[in-house]
Image (cartoon, one colour):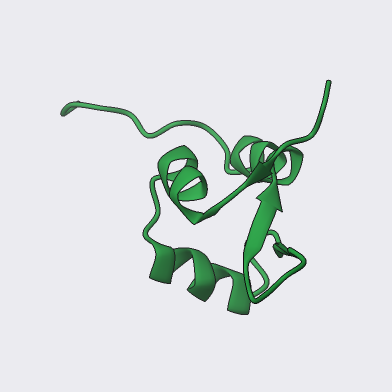
Amino acid sequence: MTDTLMRVPAVKQATGYSRSSIYALMKQGKFPAPVKLSGGGAVAWRSSDIAAWIAAQGAPAKRGAA
């Protein structure tokens, strides 16, 4: 399987977090660091890092009242 690079819109969609929340979590050391892309200040995340982070978040939230 090939590891793909995900830009901010794809990471937002995959995690459900806003751009500012992603960067805040990164600053706290609670989110994978991106890789710098050549040719400017663009960054992207490895899809495997994002998938591993999602898997490590635990059980999904329960819906509805008990």
